[in-house]
Amino acid sequence: MPQSVAPERNHLLAALPAEVKVRLFPHLELIPMELGKVLYEPGDTLQFVYFPVDAIVSMLYVMESGASAEIAIVGYEGLIGVALFMGGESTPSRAVIQSAGNAYRLRGQLLKDEFCRHGEMLLLMLRYTQSLIAQMAQTAVCNRHHSVDQQLCRWLLQSMDRLPGNSMTMTQELIANLLGVRRESVTDAAGKLQKQGVIEYSRGRITVLDRSRLEALSCECYSVVKKESDRLLHTVAGIPRHAVDA
Amino acid sequence: MPQSVAPERNHLLAALPAEVKVRLFPHLELIPMELGKVLYEPGDTLQFVYFPVDAIVSMLYVMESGASAEIAIVGYEGLIGVALFMGGESTPSRAVIQSAGNAYRLRGQLLKDEFCRHGEMLLLMLRYTQSLIAQMAQTAVCNRHHSVDQQLCRWLLQSMDRLPGNSMTMTQELIANLLGVRRESVTDAAGKLQKQGVIEYSRGRITVLDRSRLEALSCECYSVVKKESDRLLHTVAGIPRHAVDA
DNA sequence: TGTACTCTGTGTGCTACCGCACATAGCGCA
DNA sequence: TGCGCTATGTGCGGTAGCACACAGAGTACA
Image (tube, rainbow over all chains, first blue to last red; front, side, top):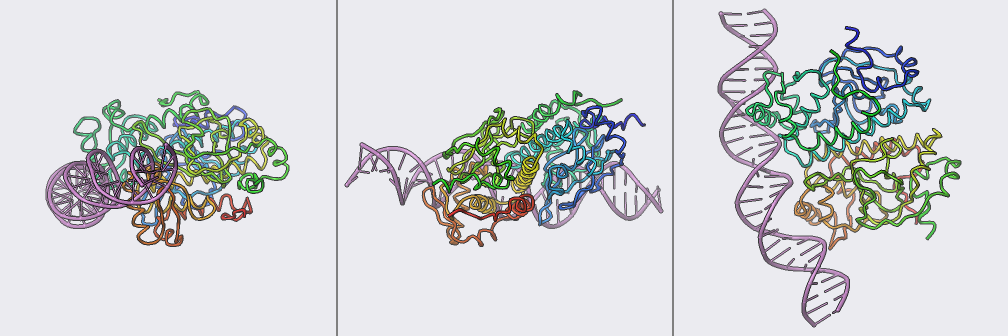
C-alpha cells in the first residue's frame, strides 16, 4: 500500500513547498509504530523527529509518584519532537504510541539544516508549535475544571479526529493513564456513554456511534483547540482536516 | 531610578548580543504595569511584546463558564507575546498583570524584523518559548494530581522568584482565581502555612518567612520547571537567576 | 474444550474540594 | 471617631473522584 502511506498524508509534510519536499523527502524513513512503544523519555537528546501518517502519539508527563497525564495528542496533523528545533534538544515529557500505525522519521540534523534556511519550513514548524501550545494550555484548564465524563468525550473526539473510521483499539485502563484518572472512573464515564448509545465498546475496542452527541457532551475544550489549530494550520496546508485517503 | 529599570534587568534583553541591543534598545518603551490591567484578550492581534523588568504577568485561560486558570507566570526572565513571532499573531489566552511594576515594550513589527534576521534573537526567543511550554505542561499535570496546599506553595515560589524581597501584594481571592480554585480553599491552605510559620499575611500582603520549608511543602512541579528553564536559558543569559539590582 | 488472562463492572468507605451563608476584623476615609 | 468596604475565617451539606476489593465475562490459546 504505497499510496496509503504517502508522506503527504502527514499534513505538515504535505504543506511544504515543492522545493523543500525535493530536498527532504528522500531522507524520510517510514517507521512502523507499535502500540505502547516509547519514542523518547524525558531528557533524552532527540535524534529524530516523527511525522505520523496514521499513528497517534501521546505526549505524556510522568510524575515522581508514577502518576501521569497526557498533555497533548499528536497525529497526522503534526510532528513529534519540537524541542529539536526549538533549541532545547530534549523535553521533560515522554512520547508514547497511543495508536499503532506508521510515521515518517527524519534525522534531527536534516530538519535543523532545513530549519536554518529560514524558509517556509521554519514558519510552518513555528505555527504548528503554537497550535501545540494551545492544546497544552487547554489541557491544563480542562484538568482543573471539567469532569471525567466531559474529558473522556473530549479525548475520544481528539483521538477519532486523527484516525480513519470511527473505532479504535484502546482499553479503559490505558485511557485512564492518559487522562490521569482511575480506571474505574473511566469505566463509569464510558458506561454512561454506552447506555446513551453514543459509543459502543468491548474488550479494548471503542466505536463512536453518535459523534454529534459526543461533541455536545464534551467540554468546550475540544472545539476551542480544534478551532485554534485550524486557524493556525488549516489555511496553510490547504487540506481538509478529515481527509482520509481511500 | 534609571538604573533599577535598565532593560538588562529583563534576562532575555540582557542576553542579546551587543549588536542586537544597539538596534533594538532605542525602540524599547518603558511602560508602567498596574495591577489587574489586561495586556491582551483572547484573539487580540498582538501589537507589542512586553519584557517585564519588575512586574509579573499571568497567562490566564478563561472558560465559557467564567472559570479561569493560570497556565503560566512570566516575569523578568521572559516575555509576553510569543504568538507574535510564532506566526499566529494571537492566542486564546489572556495576559493580566499579577504584580505591578514596569515592562519594556517593543512594537511587534520591530521584533519580527529582528527575528527575520535569523540571528541570536531567534534562537533565544525559541528557547524561551520552549521553557514556557515546559511550564505549561507542568501546570497541566499539577492541576490534575496535586492538592491546593501543594499548588499554593508552588505558586508562591514561582511568584517570589520573580520579585525582589520576600513579600508581595496579593489577596487570597486573586490567588484563587489564578489557581482556579475557591477563595476559601486558598484561605485554608494559607492558614495552614501561616500556622506553621512558613508565611505571614494580612489584608493583601503576603510574606514568605521560611523559603526552604515552602519548597519542601511544594509539589515537585516547582523544581522541575525551574530546572528546565535554567537548562534552557541560564547558560545563555549568564546571569544568576536571583540577581536583583540593589 | 477448557483454562488462564485480560478487560470490564460494582460496591464501600474516605477525602478533597465545592457552593453557600455568614461572622469577624483591619484599613481608609469622612 | 466612626462608617463602610474589603479581606479573611468558619461552618455545613453535597459531590466527584480516590483506594481497595472483588465479581463476571469475553478472548486467546493450549
